[in-house]
Length: 445
Image (tube, rainbow, N blue to C red; front, side):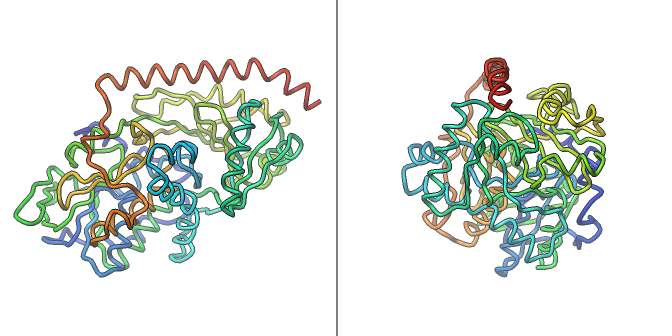
């Protein structure tokens, strides 16, 4: 049980998210019920989407969180809603087979529709922008991968287009990328405000949202489960553990199926309006094909949010903005040196194979884990499937595979291996820059 991860509390949430959009006082809080049909541990996007679906289908449901709504990985993410799995579709089809792999790929592709549909239905104020996402090629090999991705999704009717060098420079507002993929399905939002909005909607539908209720144990009692918390105990027929990288010891061996990895973000002070308008003028978020996270986007107030480098397993804000500043200066030489206003970080739940699953730890005890950095689109979809499972759906009727956690546990020494992999990817990314930067600049001239 990784209790130390609970240090990510409301006080360390980024103010760029916490001070905007949905307010926490709009959420109706109820006392801990003695009994419920379903108890959900974790008030992030996965747990709240599950609660909303269950409550709207007549189930009595309680959501328990050790801190507050959205204070875990949800409220600390980069803020883009991506219609992809972590790995390319062909890999998922080989890994799972065409039927299960196809369902999982389709769920990822449908994720933005589902998320933005929730936002519209429940009128959630979360700075939702759906102008698409830009995926730029940082090398010619990256351009080939993007072309393959575009061909796959075009064949399935998705609104994607390939941009040439000039089109990419116009969409980005600078840089010398050889090309990019523009996927119109995706978008950006304030993830903490989205969580608060889902909590409001779930509570209005009848769910009990109980915060600052640390779950101490989940124990089988007869035909149900007793969930003991710091605010008392509740008994439920079904328990859904939706803690992602946080507190996974509650779901038996399912906690061994994900490895918490720290990701880091930073936000700048507001740019002058005339300069902000030139950076990503279509207001798509930008990532590229390098091996480590490379996100950059502009908020409505003209602030840059960027993924930054930081310790893979460290605590606190910890991110270093130096490399992000250098990259922004190369992309947008018309900008003055970036003045960073705040940094933050959070844990993601990396699965060994980088695919999310529903883990059945025991009859009536399920965990939805392994979002692997794709939580803003896949998290609510996973929550909906967990709710369907709790309502009696068969595994074949779900988008996400239902698995035994014994088959997907990380190996001993995983942290050492992951650290080595991160350093290797960082080195290869730097080598790519060194090899291609001068050539790209000459091609752009």
